[in-house]
Image (cartoon, rainbow, N blue to C red; front, side, top):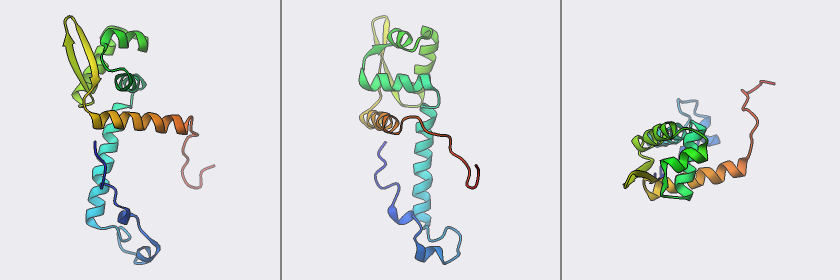
Length: 140
C-alpha cells in the first residue's frame, strides 16, 4: 500500500482560492481523484481493523510471522473455528497469506507494504491512546 503522491498538498484549499466561491474551492479534479483513491485505501484499512480481533491478528502476524491459527485462537481467547474465519476474511482482503505446514496453517502478512501499514497504524494507536469521542461543530 504505497500512498506516496496520493494526497498532494495542492489539494488543500488556500485562502486565495477559497475566495473564488466555486465548488471545491480551488481543489483540482486531479487532486479530488487522488483524495478519493486515498479515502478508498483508508476505508480498506479500517475494514480490516473494523473488528478488534481481526486487528489483533494483523498485529500478531506483523510481529510474529508464522503463528498457527491454533496459536492465534489461544492469543485471542476464541475458538479455532472463529480465529480461522477471521484469518480467512483477512486473507480474502489481501492482508494475510496462509501457508500449510503439515496439518497446521501458518499466518503471515501478505507483503511488506501491508506490514508497514500495520506497523504504522500500531504506532499511531500507541501514540494517540484513548481518544474522546468526536463531536459535531457546535455540539456540547
